[in-house]
View (cartoon, rainbow, N blue to C red):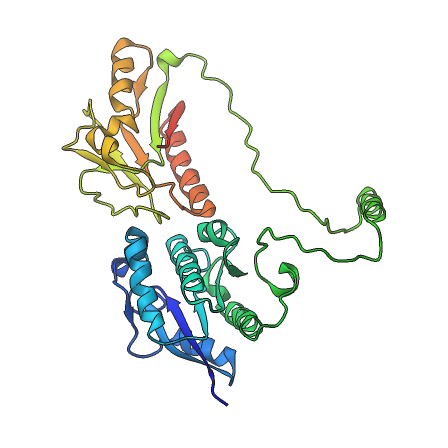
Length: 349
């Protein structure tokens, strides 16, 4: 029996090319299947064969999404696949966005079963879970041994045209699609049963889970702003000209800290934005529009504030994973607190 043809998509890291220093790798077909593709091929069993692995660097794909999508799609088409699998991307933000993007592109262009896998907090999950099947994985590659069999099992069932069950049954992320089914108990009885279990402190599972939002208590107001040290922090991607730390335009894997000692104004010659989620023209002409150093200096001279903290912190909020954002905030907050900063102005775009 002829095997079903599968094409696999991976980033530069899982292709064995390198890490962040190779994130600008352009799309290409791997000469030989990388280890992750070979493992996935084994999990797919005898009825399937991975006939090719397409590789693209995370930065290259995210900075050239339309062009990269077309390039990768062209390479995939050449294999005449019956099934397409991307990842798993775990919690790697840019990889998740790339995997979700190309899975959707291939699904729409070739009309074949397509699936990817990633951690639930990966920005790619929120962006694409309504469009494609995303198998849920752990947050890191340490969970690879469980992720590949899970991804393969779902891909096999999907490609054979078998009925796909609920997210809980199949292990994919909820897509917001409601399906009617008949339950032996009416809704009012189920609701009362859950309520009784809740009152008794017993375990129960809601049929309609609510979103889980962080609740942060506000700090007390600054008592005397005229004596306060004020810091600037931004997710608008403001960086010294040339972006010395190479902060990514989306799904940032880092933040930068930059001295503004003696700086009165962020000029077009000295500062720019690394952000890829908005039109940067007006920001690049005058970065004070996103990070108001000029206004804070005026307030400092007027005595309206105590002083401006001489370092600003910057990253890119575009597609950045929630876990990464929390990590950056914790580190930045600890540094500001240690230096006696009284308040922070956090700007976006």
